Image (tube, rainbow, N blue to C red; front, side, top):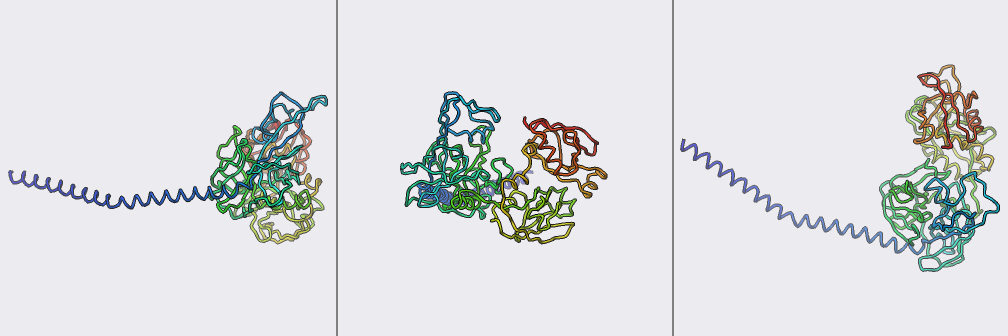
Length: 495
């Protein structure tokens, strides 16, 4: 017994010695590793310092070419107040007119006195002789435009041209040997890249903010007609509009245009017009004072997975031709309703927005090659792009009420009838619903068949659009059908 107790005590002591030895070794190893840890921390700090120096260098080089733009505009007098932003700011960020301005459709009294309001924004110099890129909404309808440089010099500016569909404008000051910014290639941008925004938020001259590219190719934002926005979390606020979005090489990759906000201030989501789109626009504005766009003569829509399956496609990449206008380039080339465009000049086509933008930016008279899928077979069709006019633009645009409804439709075909169980029926099938729209709030979903608009039977997209157009501002009464049967749905698009 005594031997056993002695043995256990010795074993316990041995374990304590072993434990102490292991801890000692670990402590020694930790001490030995401390210099390595300190070196890693020092290296990380050096990297941060280098990043900061890169930002500082870009700001130092770019700031002289970034300008502060102040505009004056004469409007009907309202309450006695001087607003720091123009009317377009309120429409873009609050969805309502500027205080003191009439609501849409509200007549202005001819006896009403006039007053001058001021707005402000940013821009950047693109040529030594004074051409400046900015946003259309910064200078639109301005009576007077003043441009102030970083060195304090101030010049009156002439509006060379504006393009509301892309929100791009060019103004010019009478000066020479001006600092300029180099335009980069926005097509090379990748999500996650560092970008810097320069401008004059809230009138605070030459403010620099940093962030990353959050997303590319943003569309359906409702800011302009032709959208292909760069989304960034670099802080953009009112007054930044028209300023440059710059990469780490100091090149302009975008024009800061708008923010997504419920308060009017920065919430981490800003949008910039890609410089490759702006480059084409400003060249035309300088050369012609206006923009000439290409035209095919089709209405197109994005493919949904259900639509892709019904057309025998493996995925939903491509754009579906919902309508071909008569006597148009598309009809002359043999394009048909139900064709799915999957390529243009050998490059893949995946969604509507970039396809529409590419056609619009194609010079009229240019022949392009479209790859389409028809009845499961791939075809190649040559199309000669023509010039878009006001009449042709109106012909392919959706009625305003349809835009407000927030849905897209296609004519019911035999394949769709089989898929959704509408054999023997006529009408249009809902193919897409925009989140938060009148249609979404009414509970409409893709796959629903619309058979009547305001008690008027419709059989195809053209009849549907005409019926919607006739509705004006009145609530739209739809007779719809799904797997549960038929029901009426009223959509008030003016709410």
